[in-house]
Length: 376
Image (cartoon, rainbow, N blue to C red):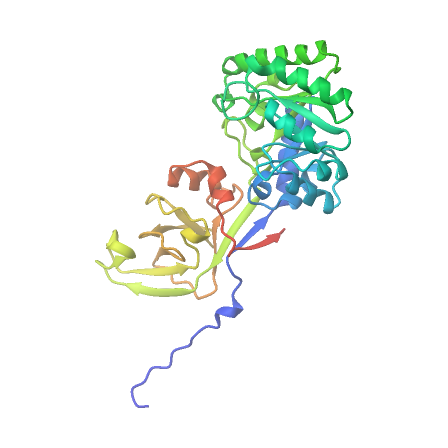
């Protein structure tokens, strides 16, 4: 056909899809950092599918690095860890799908109890001794038993233990202000947990394994450590107290699937909120807000390609983002790194959180199911 231009259409099936790669070595390094800060046992909390990194993968790496316990929010999550071959003690709390006493007994899972009603529900279905950690509300009004109701919870727990239904082995609470990294902000919770511990021992239960600190307390306030600390976000490189440089435990990549040149004055994306100011190259990555890229990101957001950062421009769409690569024009299939471990070039989850006006937890837990998961 005279005058026709032959276009080479790439086979998109040849490109790796958007991929979240979990880095177990980084998890191990983060456990080592926590171990250097405390003499207490370390519980690796792998809720929310290991903060989006894969619960079993993170748990296995943490245990191999020295974590003695695991924590989840639900008995079913804990049972999955058992099925994966993890044998260390596991504690579960919240249990929004219900208290399955039989599963807890069969899989040797400890359950945290924060009210008389929760305890009654457990006692109703428990056929043998379930290991229990009493959960005290230490200032969040979110979960746990308020101090004025503590004696009633202990009394009912003592009755349940005498009947062989439960065995009280632990005591837990949460630090509402630990992210401030100011020990004086934690003093009230520390005082309360000590009072609760004395009441448990006075009731004849023996000394419970006591745990109050999560990642921030573990890294910034030894007075909160007691017998065990709960390392959750810290496993994957997030320190809410911002006192310690941890190692990012994942890398999100995506291929360039479309490229074009644009003259100055070209609007990009819905609403034309970004307009090119010079002749430039634009590329599309197949990731959008359905995949966990926050729609609210600022104009500072960027990705890394071949050792350089390039800005994300225009609005984030459901399935794609556009990057401005300036004078560089990359071929289809070129890999862009959206976030990864700190190396000075690759954007980190902390940066993405700042660009979106949120916390890094929401970045890693928000990655959608369309993104392939791999392990380094």
